[in-house]
Length: 464
Image (cartoon, rainbow, N blue to C red; front, side, top):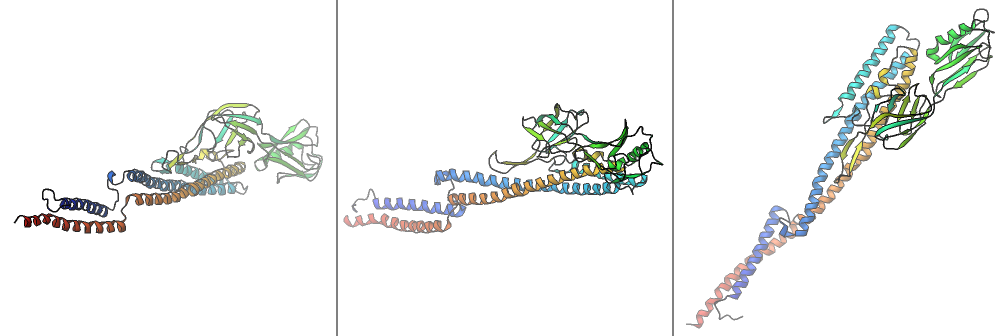
C-alpha cells in the first residue's frame, strides 16, 4: 500500500469501515442491555424469533389455563359446600323419621310437629338446589348433570340417573317381576267365625300381635289383631277359604314374613317364613349402550353405576317398555390444556327434593304414621347415599383432576418460560463483555481514523 497517493486514503477508509462496524456492535449491545432482550426484531435471529413467539403463546395460554383450573376448584368447592348442608338436613330428617317410627310418639300434635319439621327441611333443600350458583351457573338444579324427562308415568314411577346413562330415549326391558312375600297358614278352619283351636301368642316380624284363647277368640279376632299392627310389621291378614293368608305390603327380597306362635293358632304351632323377590331388567340407553339392572330392590331396578328406575305396579310385568324417558347429558367443563381436546368435565346431578331417593322421593315423605316413618327411613338412606356419593365424586374430581392438573401446569409453565428466556432474553454477563469489547474497539478505531487522516500530510514534505 503506497503512502504517496492522496486521492484514496485506503487506511482511512479501512479505519472508517471498522469504526462503523464496531459502532453497530455497540448500538446492538446497548439495545440488548437496555431492553433485556437478545431478540428485539426478526433480523436479530429469524428462526429464534419463530420459536420464541410460539413459546410465548404457550406460556401466556398456560397462565389462562391455570386460572381456569383455579376457578374450577372454586366452583367444585361451592357445590360441595352446599351439598354438605344438604347432607346435614337429610340427617336431621332421618332423626325425625326415627323419632316418628316409635309408637310412643302417637299423639296427633307430636306427629304433626315432626312432619312440619320434615317439610321445612324439604323446602330448604329445594332452595339450596335452586340458589347454589357460581358465576351465574346453576350447580345443583340438574342443569349441570344427567337428567331424565319421564315420559311413561304409567309404567315408571321414578328415575334417577348418573353420568353413565347415555343421552336419548331409554327403553326398559323387565326380565323378572318383583313379588310380595305371602304365607298361607297351615291350620284350617270352617270359617273365620270359628274359635281358634288353642291358646297361644303370635309374633310377626318381631312385633307381638297378641295372645289368643279358644274360649274368647275366633279366627277373625286373629285377623283383626294382625291388621291392627300392620303399619309396624308390614304384613296384612285375610281369610282365604279355610285358612288365614298373610301378605307382605311391600315388594322385594328385603321385605318378608317371619311368623312364630307359641301354640297352634294359625300355623300348626310352628314358625313360618316367606320373602318377596326383586325386579330385574335391562335398559337400553339413547346411545345404544345397555345396562343390566339387577342390583335394586323391590320395584326398583338399579345397575352397578347407580342408575335406578322404579316401576309402577302396572309396569311390573315381563315386557319391554319403550321410550320411557328422554335422557339429557349435562356437565360443567373446564379448559385445562392448550388444545381443544384438553378439557375436564364433571356431572352434577339434581339435588332437588323430588330427585332424591330411588324407591321414593323425599319430597313426598310423610312421617305422620309409623309405617310412613319406616318407609321414610329407606328413602332417606338412599338420598343420603346419593348426596354422599356426589360429594365423593366432586372431591375426587377436585383432587385427582383439577388440583393435580394445576400442579402439572405450573411445572410446564415454568419450563416453557425458561426455554423462551434462553432463546430471547439477554445474557447480561456475555453481553456486557461484548459491549466492553465493542466500546474499546470504537475508541481504537476512532483514534486510528484520526491517524489515517493525518498521513497524507506527509506528502507535503515531498513537494517543498
